[in-house]
Length: 308
Ligand code: CP
Ligand code: NVA
Image (cartoon, rainbow, N blue to C red; front, side, top):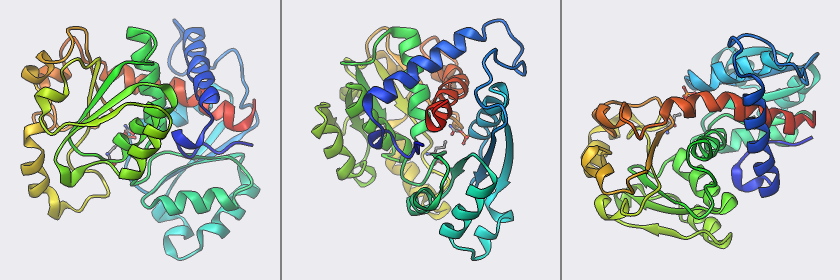
């Protein structure tokens, strides 16, 4: 049994084989309707609990659909409806759910909740986003980059803006998939030093460049995300906007990247804030491929977790 808790906690060879498996399963579905089952039904007879303590469109729909395509069933639970939200311990929740379901995917706030759930669960636990990381997104993003441009190893990825949870998982990805990573944003919103060190320890070249235009020079991939994440207090909104304005991804900034550079955003996006519509809807944008590939990459993650 494998938990999928973070990119840096998962064996690099296993991550690579999940990307290949996701690609293979996607190709095998070519021409089918979205709801049609896969030929292979590795999750037949399995029940997967999808727990959401924060809102979600992509994670909710892609996990639910992915389980069904592979022959399994899901129950989607909101944190507020569970006793978890009313004082039952995480450890007891994990022990109880393990008696009912075959796998648990959770989107939550503090990373400690995810880690405790995994510690006391007898079934695999998947991280569907915490305040600190979002590993499933990076699996989809690596798959998407490689579909368009071939191997990501050695490429230059530039993150613009807030050094948030998605940025953290990109840093982990730099170490595990072997790409270079440049962060450009205000010092106050730098990614955690621990994560930068982790990536460097794995041999990734990690740089911090305060000037966005300079940072994207030579970039193969430019990535951004919302300026205010779900766990950020709305009271910080104005301050964050002021700090992050110079890091908006617009056409002028993309002009300074390589001519074939791609643009990514995990979505949901705030158009004309962290990124302009011209970039989001422009020829370098692969944002909807990323969203689709959440489905395929996560199906491979779930098979790895269950060993099926
Ligand atoms: N990218 C992502 O995780 O989207 P949702 O918040 O809609 O799940
Ligand atoms: N950084 C964002 C990602 C949403 C998928 C958040 O945590 O709100």
